[in-house]
Length: 303
Image (cartoon, rainbow, N blue to C red; front, side, top):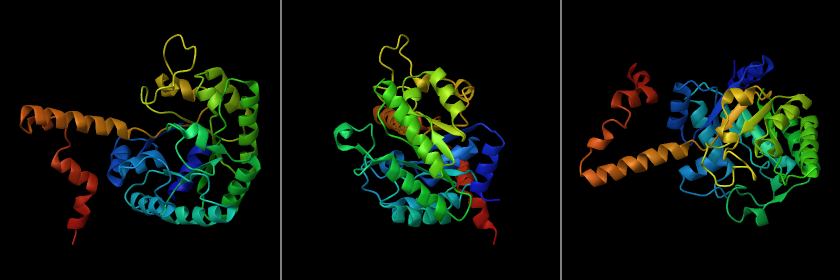
């Protein structure tokens, strides 16, 4: 059974899934070994792995190649960032098959454009424009028509949550259109996640006929995550997985876990420099045999 078919079956069975973001094949293997249900290959962390910000310098070919390498080494379903469809509906039709061939189990597409950049980057608020819902629906429809296997299409809207009911209504309207166009899963809208309002999150999950994915970064990663007027200084990222699942969400995804790895690396390097020896690394590192196990070295010895 393909990873995409396995993922689809698990969602149909009502399973609750947790996805963690990878930035290379080895990090994906670590995530799989830790027992998570999905691996997310999203634009910010894999661009960061190249030493770049998430501003579309990397190409879909680059991402498809990494997806291919990753899918060949893990069995865990991979969620891949399909950006805004990589161009026209025709482009989306082409690339959905390429990522399908590469081994992606799910592709998520959103409606910002024409300039691609992470909406959390400074200056993005004046550069990013949200595409018309009709255009993004065309992209999703083209993807749904072109796919050959069970790859899932996951839709997200980038309409800003300004606290007004009109913004909430527009987010729901768009996601409903995307479902009608062929989306199998939708991201929980920002008016629910960024407000840290579980009542709104549950209400949304109850009104849509497809599984809901809730995405948030590790707590403390981004300033501005805490809702305005919060009395406890907490955000959606501080919630337990159980609380989110109890709202009807089926997939929880966090992509920026790489920040934990790089901080640990930086702190260990600082201790090494300060102490003038490698002793601080002793308790911080994977042992050589663990690395070999992750790399699957044993299979290369069978000759």
